Length: 234
Image 1 (cartoon, rainbow, N blue to C red):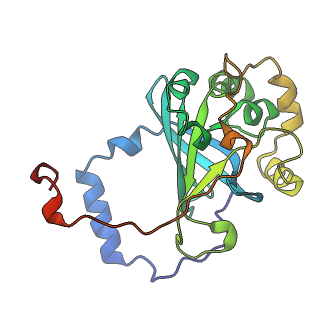
Image 2: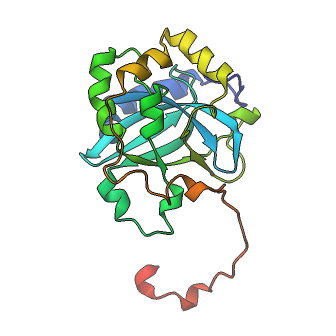
């Protein structure tokens, strides 16, 4: 998919800038980026407004077998915008989190088993092997760029995002559009994923916002003067 129809303000990249980038790329290493090995496509909705739904392209790397981290773009082309991040953890790591942290995380079982979370261009039999694992995980997602509002730049506070948990939540026009563009069928894939299972202890009741809307709010606080901070932290 092409990225969202938002024109970013500013001049086109100049030749001098491109030359510096080319020279730097030949010298520097990009190990964190080079670890990205996977493209997942799914949908997120805003934690305080399910009517605001966004197509999200995740480019992910494994930190280890139980944790992966993903850069989220609004598309997969060269003009795609970096709009957020998501962390995926195993059930065991999720269960070890403090209870007041758990509502910030969402489950992936429905996303996977419904077919709406998929790996573009990867044969179904291959991606299902990984989906078996993703189905058991939890994710924590923040978006920084509200492209659905047409914002030309990342404005406002980071937005806590959530994932769908049952039928009837995802807008059908979004589902049909992505099925058409990628020539896939969520219903056909749903049938092929029926055997998959979610978290071994079931979806935790505190996950997915504990069933309530969640959003970040900014408030003013008093900042202690520098002289009151121990020198070890300066």
